[in-house]
Image (tube, rainbow, N blue to C red):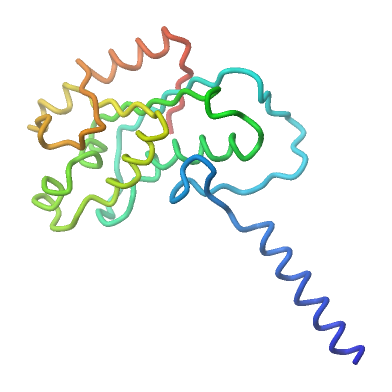
Length: 179
């Protein structure tokens, strides 16, 4: 009997440890942007200030069948702060897309034509847009890569250039995050 109790306690503690190390998504973007819980961080998050951020996304990855993790970072940003007390209305997020990342905002039809599969970023972009995230494509990249407005998801806005969008957003107190 004692042995069974010890085994049960061991199993429960093991699963408790796993649960704490398992990332979770939501509450803003439920299917993307999983984050880990950080118990008692020393650097405290100011949950009352406005967080205005622009992500500079200029590259993609070789796997054309999975989401671009740089785009998914916007979902992680929203979720991790919401999970830790920052209200959604205190977060303004924009993505400025340029370079090879421009393929990640194509419609399924355009992506299918180029890669033979539907765009794995479609649902992510729609979820981000539904959460108020601006998705902005560099017009110079679009022209260089022959991407028309009909080739991109309807949630995408065209800018004169990525540089223009980045400057204007930063002039409006958005903070640049570039990976």
